[in-house]
Every structure is written in C-alpha cells, then in structure tokens.
Image (cartoon, rainbow, N blue to C red; front, side):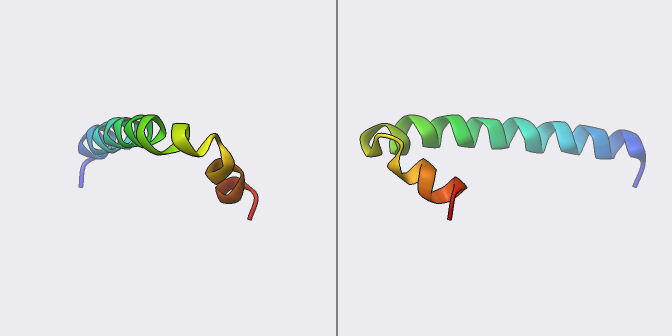
Length: 43
C-alpha cells in the first residue's frame, strides 16, 4: 500500500472514531454522570 493511501485511511478512521466517541459521550456518559468514565480509565 502507498503511504498516501495509508494517511487517508488514518484520517478517515480518526474522524469516524471521533464521531463515535462524541456521540457515545453525549448519549451514555451524561446520564451516568461520569461514573462509567472512572471505571473505564481506572480499572
């Protein structure tokens, strides 16, 4: 694979991941009031 295509792929993945994270945080984290966050980041 060419490096250019890899960069484009990375860009797409990062954007999709960002959208997923923002949507998930808006829907799931708010009602849990950040309790799930602590469990995820500090197991």
